[in-house]
Amino acid sequence: MNFNRIGFVTLVRRELRRTLQIVNQVVWPPLISTLLYILIIGLSVGSRIQIDTGVPYVAFLIPGLVALTVIESSYGEGSSSLFQHRFMNSIQELLVAPLSYWEIVGGFIFGSVVRALVLGCLLLLFLPTFSGLWPGSWVLTLLLMTLISVLFTAIGLLMALYAEKWDQIAIPQVFVFTPLIWVGGAFSPLQLLPASLQTVARFNPMFYIIDGLRQAVLGVGEAPFWVSLLVTLTLSAGFLYWVLHCFKTGFKLRV
View 1 (cartoon, rainbow, N blue to C red):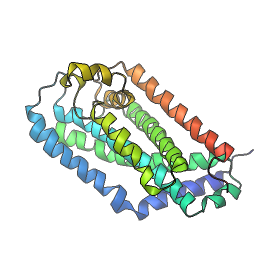
View 2 (view 1 turned 30 degrees about the vertical axis):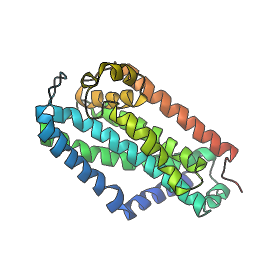
View 3 (view 1 turned 180 degrees about the vertical axis):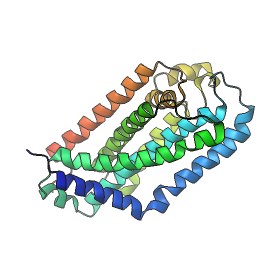
View 4 (view 1 turned 45 degrees about the vertical axis):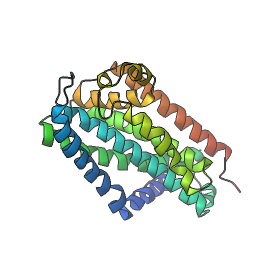
């Protein structure tokens, strides 16, 4: 089947237009909350935290906050957009349109990734503002942010398919993402955790996702960069395949 460029672009534009319509909900809150994290944790409390990373604590903190925002933005965009289609039964219009299942999934993911990259780049401007440092490699930084966004958009799309009520969409954020992020090195290096938790954290995929982005931005990390990149890439490919399979088989899409 030939690529339906017009249909794909239309779907992406719809997702971006949706973001612009709720800009006060999806853009300003993460910028303000990140600024508060930097001022209160990064500068006030962080000035008393001694870490052996070669960079100031506030610089160490910012990539973790960027990862946190990209994760929340991508999951929220993917899950809410698709579930709204299912809830309003407008998903049927997409299914009968001349779009393949991978073009539909690609439209959702592309729109979510663009929003996540814009947010991530805006947040990275806090890095030179508060630490005087700039991202070491914009190519690797954008690559990692893209992979993270693809991963959590795919998870969001899957949750939108499996969920039966709006409340269920928040379950992964509250009971899975948040605990894993807090012990995954977003706010502190593993060296500050108890020895028992350090071992457990090594099996936490969030640790490698966050550490990979931090190494792309700052060039410092606690795991080999290729391991972090491989973990992020593998998870992204795995969940993307899962959601593509669900769309291909029409799982909870056709009535």
